[in-house]
Length: 229
Image (cartoon, rainbow, N blue to C red):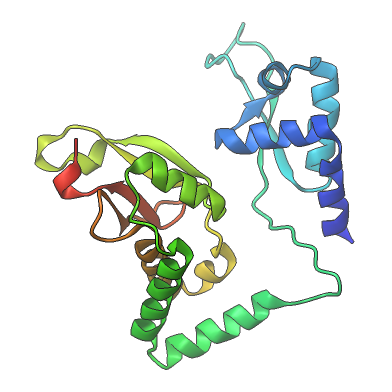
């Protein structure tokens, strides 16, 4: 019932826009910023943001948004970020997560990593169909967004190698396999990499590689070495 209530809270169009804005920032968002972005009064935004926190879709806290501390810095403001808990509704009830975890546990114990990654790569290729590999990072972002990865183009200071120059990479704020990946990270992250290799291709202008970071997908997409400009 809690999941149903949480999802039902998004029926209000203003509330949904506020939720999507907060989620899209990938950081703490204050009431003023959210209200301005959505085009509503601050008091209305505060009401809806608190409601989203109440049903567990957002987490709230407080901090000074001025960047200053001490006397004259102002009172801490209420801020919001996406909640880590997952919400799903299935009618009638289904429990695919338990099945996925049991299958992952069995595959890990049986040493079936190679078979799983091969199957994942084939699945990625079938999802891509007869189309050519991604033409660039923008094309990859469209494909990843359609799969729920929430891709974002970023400057990666560490990806430039010995040159030290920052390069553009696509990092993903969401892992569609998060719950199972937390329990079986090597197995599921390897599967995820193979799936994305099949989806975007391995011999085109972009490539997927492992680059796990806290709170993000374990895979990053970047220009291939022969197309690094």
